[in-house]
Length: 78
Image (cartoon, rainbow, N blue to C red):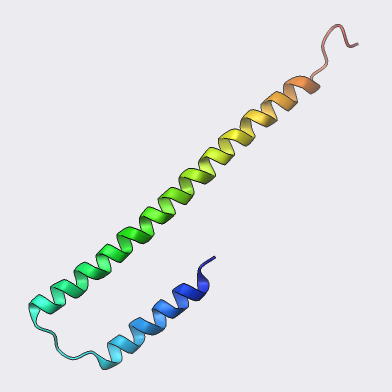
């Protein structure tokens, strides 16, 4: 979990807001673009992790189905 990183980001943003001066439109656009790029990177990481979790869930479903099939009573086992 990245709580520490998130907390650190929140502190940095808070400090930046307190010391922020009026920016020119070009500086503001650059700052916003940088924040959007960071958000995109964070989302990409989360999407990758969700994909990994989905693959693991799919593998687990296959194993459970095989296990259930093996444990079903068959006519020759009765």
